[in-house]
Amino acid sequence: MPSLVLLLGPMASGKTSLCKLLFHAMEDSNLKPFAIIQENRRDAKGYPVALRLIELPGGKECFLGARAGNVEELYSGEGSGKELKPFVFERSAFAWATTEIAQALAKDCGALIIDEIGPLEVLEGGGLMTALEAAAKAERVPLIVSLRPSLEEKLMLRLSRFPSRQILRIATDCSKGKNDLFPLIQTIIRHCQDKK
Image: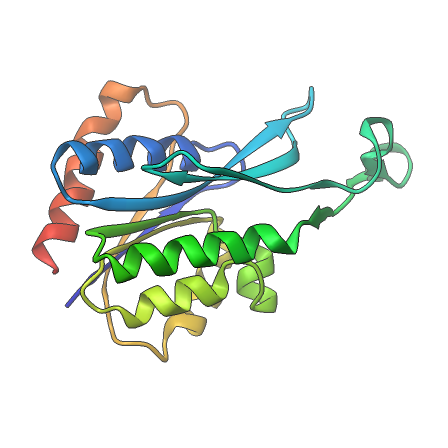
């Protein structure tokens, strides 16, 4: 049974850093990983304000989106009830990433890492959901997906119509250094190798 690794954590918990470290460790182990990584630029409060997708191993990039309005207008509402404005996404970025993932699957990549599956995918079926569903059909490919814990149940419902996978749940922790993550990365790699 193939594996599904869920890297769970709130915003700024180290999901993206773990995905990149995992990619490089898998690459060093000749496991032929492929990844779509979502990098973000944050404001002074640590909230993401602009996003880009990066494909690994090639390093190609694509602008994904930004919060509506300019920097001074990122927050709506008044006083302590201010909320961040939503992202305005470039739909072409999702199409680009979906094509990149399809090509990697066609070339028999050894593992697929997607950072990050968010509300657009899980709640609306948009974004990278089509690519994730196509990958879920590819039973031979281990999937590693980062997401917020609040979205896990809905993601699992969306994936329930595809072949079963052995699931490994990992809570991310940004307080851990690179060296502290090595045993965790090795556990994930073993899980993916054992379940192929």
